[in-house]
Length: 137
Length: 403
Image (cartoon, rainbow over all chains, first blue to last red; front, side, top):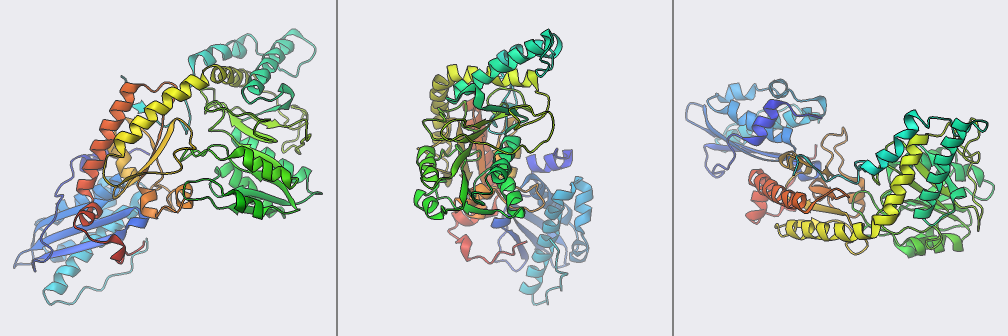
């Protein structure tokens, strides 16, 4: 199976690799997946007073498509409001990276990571977590 | 040095040019049907097949009358297991095999179960070897066949074949071995090893794809298998179908080359393999899978903890290797062979199999070492698990959401 050029680009030059201070109240952290399944994503966002994401970082254990999905997610998150970030759908990632059907779970995981990071941020700042649909992967 | 580099010689091998040379006349000039008994063209083709039969037999210490040509080892495994089950059903219906066998053996056994047979799938020990006491304990009066592979395709572990066949024979069962990875790589001798049936394939030993053989013992005991394909009664009635003469000639030539060169080749390969393994296990948290003393000379299966195999392979550009991770399969299940050794799923996902071969050079091994080290280091920088490990977080203490 050949990877798309966009997957190769994100994999070779991943954007926003790194770690934010998870103890800061401005930072939300999402850790999703499991080592047993061969995919773990950690996605972090830093949010300013206007609910805008000013920074996003990731680290991923997984295949090329998983790394590319999380790299792309951080790129999209920067500058978005929390509400707009919540609206990112895994199928947007599938389309952008031209993921084949066997790799759709990588995009689902990235969407889960975004939502988990947002909820972590919300809970830290005294807001109720957003009820999430149980993902089906 | 030409890129990409091929280090996946357990999947298949490039054909040796000397094999191709031997095959070529059989496509255009010596094209006869080896079963045409009444003219020159048939005789010439038959001559080629007969000679190949001797070459194959010699490599495994058999008689040429004991070689049945097939389309490959999958067919040989199927013919042996299903054919023995059908032929010996009066005697019993129990077959013993192991969980680390190739799918051709495991799925043929599953088929036998559907037909009313009983199959015991023996576990293996942490190093991949079968425990002889466990095997003996599984033997019953109903046991007609023990089928255990010679060398494993994923980790290269070589089973104690002679001891295993002794146990099978002690209880009156036949012993069969899938020797696809071992024949032509290490010394295999059907009499010394007590083998009654043996499957081999040409394309794993520098021969063509689509041709293999099943060794079926003729004396002490005389073994029979029920044909699984009906037709002209070729190959002593055990495998009908017009013989693939060019392929068979190629298989024969491949066996002859292995017979002549195997010993020096095994010595050369094991030095290179050991060097590769030593250099790569310098990396922190890297582990060799399977027994290292009883192992094929050209294989090393190594897990690099905290990086995922498929992602790793993508970073090892220009290096063709194989991974026990199965991110591409719908099940997401990592290698069943590695899991059978008791490896945790995450280590199984982190494994890479390096398979060296006849055309592998020292320069290529140097390149492989450099590229792999770089790739592992790069991916660990991206890995949240590596970061947690480095911070001293116990990964088992985290409640992962299994998906």
